[in-house]
Length: 274
Length: 290
Image 1 (cartoon, each protein chain N blue to C red):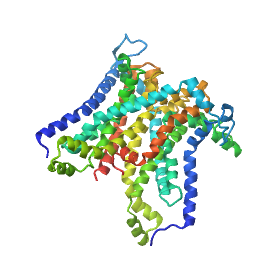
Image 2 (cartoon, each protein chain N blue to C red; image 1 turned 45 degrees about the vertical axis):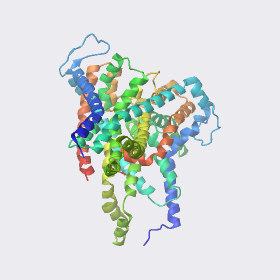
Image 3 (tube, rainbow over the protein chains, first blue to last red; image 1 turned 90 degrees about the horizontal axis):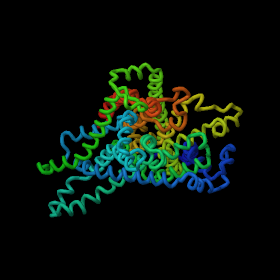
Image 4 (cartoon, chains in turn blue, purple; image 1 turned 180 degrees about the horizontal axis):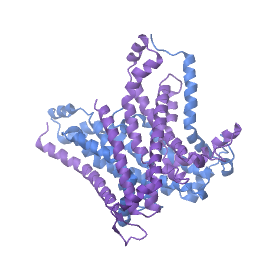
């Protein structure tokens, strides 16, 4: 009894699923639509057809200097991800290939540091940053996000590296491969996909981090999260412009996210769900 | 093939990560603990003195404290309920045969990638605004009075926004788990005459248990720290109606300049998070070691 659904059933499921999916996606869709409206149109009630102006995008750049927070976001999320990878790759590597009795405990402990509520250490971090002149600096924020995401990076890399079979190393050694050849031709190709997925997921997390990025910056180093949050004050109530800024802020990550669904599941569940 | 040399090398390779996290954990924690026993106000930084337990008493006797803890639990619990039940339902739906399944999936998971300030502002302005929001338009169309969401139901509004952000995450993980369920098992159960409900209850749900545990764990970590969504919508109000513990600490620290009080709050938040974490880690540890 093969389970082939009748076409009628399939159409019914399609309709139900599309309706629900569109309801869930609607706020994003409506933001994109609103970004092409004029300001009076934006508050004139529901309409799904904008007049198609690009003025909001131009205004956000010329009036609010959109490029600066955008670049800050790029620099901070990329920088913190690369730094975290540099620190985490050797650690994950050694835990995956020469585990000791304590490896599991260390991994669990690393994860537990993520349980510490960020706000609980807001005061000391704020005071330290103030004393060291790191407030509102890209370097400070980059270091902060490196620390925040380090446990997740180690975990993710560990679950990927663990799947590289150790026998392959021994086989290549038997074949007389030098250590250098072993690293370049055997290990690297097998490790790259895992590292790439980790990189992608971590950029997404760092891009969207919204506690430290808002609290530790004012203008100079403010990334998009802080920039958008500044629109919440009443005088910033320009919906079409807010929509344009929001669309630009989420578009790159949205697209990256669509392409990394699988890796996302693996990464965020620490390999527990694949 | 672990010689002593490779073992030493392995330790050295682990060192930077472990040391960084150790410092990251101990230094701020130690400072928070120390400050929590001090009279220390940023407006009067020259006058720092030992306070004993005063900050804790102060924080404890503040009626906002219990309200904020209650709000924190409601927020975490409410969002977990919505995302777990909704996520299971959506995962089951997306697992059905349909046209354009890939596209539906992309639409459903998208909210997860929207940064919190954007998500909150979209909902605040364009969806829930009592005058110009989409919901107000819909209510008016049916002749009902629009709801002023953030004034009347501040915490619920924030729960809705946060749930919208996390529902895709739960759905994606649960769907992945669902799709790894063995098709033959399903068929066997069907042939044995198990109904739809029985199949779900005895086969699908146990299979998803591990994924559900993971979703609860990860979401709890992030939900205990919800901040930006509150900042850009209600700013904790009206009164303290939508203030959770992180937001109360932030208010005490950076708006009240009260380092001692905020640190006492921070210590309480850490204790709370650890209690929750203990339960979760135990549950997850059981579930993950299979």
